[in-house]
Length: 137
Image (tube, rainbow, N blue to C red; front, side):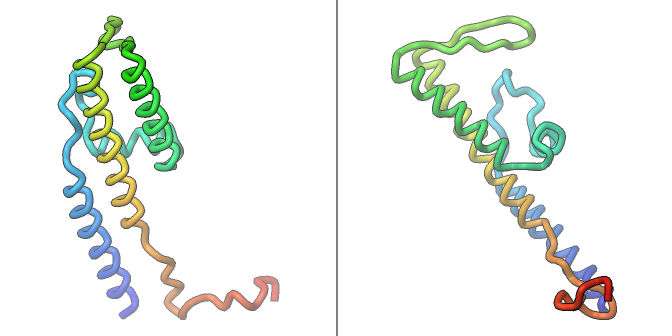
């Protein structure tokens, strides 16, 4: 019976996480971010941030602040795409900032979906462990 309960809990979490992920929407279709999808971002967080979504989000938020400050100064940003450097200014920069905001929102949504997928500890078949008794006894 307990195995059935665990299986149902797991399947519910998978279905809910899939639904939440589907609600996150796509990333912007910018050539700078070609090939970016939900799965590649999740892998990036696992590989480059040890699964820490908050660090990824903080980095994107910091970049967003920088971009807005640059735009407010009526300056530009130099980006590298396929080995070539290019500068964007004015309306191009404003559009890029909007797309970066979309990216940030999708990443936040994926982080929430990933947290929803984590299952609570369910104990063992003999019931939950007694945490008041030291293991050495």
